[in-house]
Structure formats: C-alpha cells, structure tokens
Length: 406
Ligand code: 13P
Figure 1 (cartoon, rainbow, N blue to C red):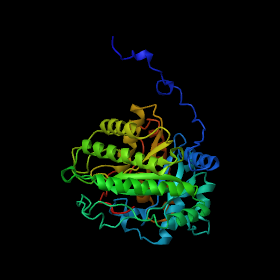
Figure 2: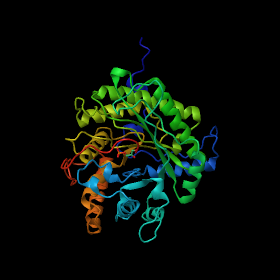
Figure 3: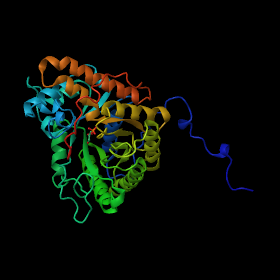
Figure 4: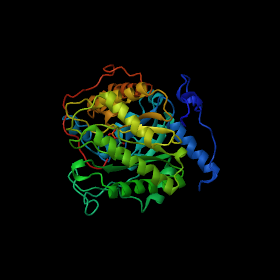
C-alpha cells in the first residue's frame, strides 16, 4: 500500500480555497522575540496599516528631483532645486482622496524635515491626509563596490549600501519627526555569464538589510526590506527567477539570524522579469514566475509585499506595464497569504510629472493624474485593472532615466 495520503486526508486550509476574504491576522506576540510585547504590537499595527487591502506606497524618496528619474525628455529639464522639490511633493501629498489608495509615503530625509511654501511641515500634510510617513535610510553605495567582484551591467562591481554606522541615531531622529517606517534599497546585478549575483554579494547584501531591519525595529520603525535585482542586462526571465529566489531565500535566513520580527516588517522586491534587452516575457509569465518565487521564499508571517516598479525598456509604458503586471498577479492568484501590492516611484509619478512640468497652473491636472494611477494600482491589487483605462503619457518622450542610487 502506498504511504501517500489521499488528497482529502490532508488538512484543508480553507483560507486558500474559499472565496471569502482571509480572516484577520491573529494577534499573538512571540515570547522568543527580543522586542517587548508592546513594541511588537506597535510594529505590527503599523505594518498592518501599511498593508491595508487595496492600498500601496507612494515612493517619493528620490535623492534628486523625481523628474530626473522619470525618463522623459522634457520633464528632465525642470529645475532641480529644494524649492521645486518641495512644491512638487507638497502637491503630491495634498492630492484630494489619495489616502483611499495610498497607505504609506516614503520620504527622502530632505522632505521629512522640510515644509511647504506656506510653512506646513510635510509630515503634517501626510498625516492630515490620512497616510503614514516613512523615510529612506540607506546612504547609497560606492561604485567601487566589493573588491574582487565582477563588473555587472550597471558598469560597476557588486555593491552594498552604506549607512549602518549612524543608523541608530538617524532612526531615532526620523521617529521623533513623525516617520513610522523606513526603506533601505540594496542593488543586485544579474549577469549569468559572469556568475552575478555572486554568493558573496548576496551574503553581504542580505545581512546589511537584516541589520538595518532590526535597528529600525529597535527604534519603532517598520522596515521596508528592499533587495532589488535590477533589470539591466540581456538575460531571460529564468535568470531573474533563479537569482531572485537565491536572494530572497538568503534574505529570510538573514532576517531570522538577526531576529527580525517579520510581523512588523514588509518586503519590497523586484517583479521577476526579463532583462531590459532580453527576450520579453508576457505579463502572465511575469505574474506566474514572480508568485512562484515569492511562495517559495517569503513566510506568510510578513503582512505585505510591495513591488518596486523598476526600469523598463524605452519602447514600454512603464506605468501601464507595472499596473498590468501587478493586476495579472492578483487575478491569477486571488488568495495569497500576503497583501501583494505596489510601492512605485516612477510608475506612479511619470504622467503626473509630465502634466505638472513645474507650473502652478497645472497642479490640479497633475494631482488628477496621480490619483488616477494610484486608483489603477489599487484596482490591480484586486486583479481588476483593465489595461488602457488609466490615461498615461505612454512612451512619448521616453529617454534613459537617471540611474544610480535611488
Ligand atoms: P521605482 O521608481 O522603480 O518604482 O522604485 C521605487 C523605489 O522606492 C525604489 O527604491
């Protein structure tokens, strides 16, 4: 007789087969955690609010004016001054109705401590609008990279981010200023012919992120953990799947090693895609491959997964591509254990920036563009976005975006 149980002898987890929404998360605290039950509850409360159904993050933490990253010929001419950045970002945060689709806003340090032209603190604008402010805490990377590692498609060796040394202090300052979560993005390059990413770079990257995560948690900030495999290169989607699985497996092992409280943290991964100049994979293939990798690697204790949008080829509409991919995932996989949502920078802002172009008279139209795209991405978290129904600037004016550290 076979030792295999028949299918109906296995315990059935109704959460994955029923058509009713999954039950709310149980609120247990982990006695083994180095955090007190109160600290755990506070972190979990923030992470769950960030992961509210139908909502995602607005990544507005670009180190320079976001119009330099938008990859648009005319928009990149907008003057990159502190005043222009404040005018643009205060416009984003005061968009009427934005909190219906956006739970958290990631800020650059400049913005966290900045006020708008009328003297209102940016954090106050965000809180007043019903969203949660957070801060980007990595201090970028040196292109010199890790000695002895190969040069990847970005033109430099493999890297890791600076910023751990004074992180404790910067976390405390950000919390005092009103931030309740943080972001740290490490860049990982793919080049199968050179063995990239190397085991060494993965190890350094994931431990760097895990160290950041627990320092954040000690200071009351929910860490967004972002090991980004960039799409530069000519590799097929399979290479990205293989590398992403290696990175995420190592990432969660490192988070365990450092004692990260997963219920009070969220993941910001890349979608699994082909390289920018590689054979193009259809949205259904991107969706199926991405979810397969996440199911293999991400514990269900983590409340949310929030994709970055990433660079796209010049003949692609980056906003539509990101929304369609996200929607396809949630349509094909309706009952996942995490909120599968967005933390887009470029893919939420491009049409908004091109509509604004630095002019006060365009504010209302630009806010509408942001709201429309945020609404489209919210629909995508339910698998309900219909391609082509959100107006976008499309590929008109597409130029190479400014690269490097976010
Ligand atoms: P994208 O602009 O690629 O969406 O990235 C957002 C981000 O926050 C990267 O860290």
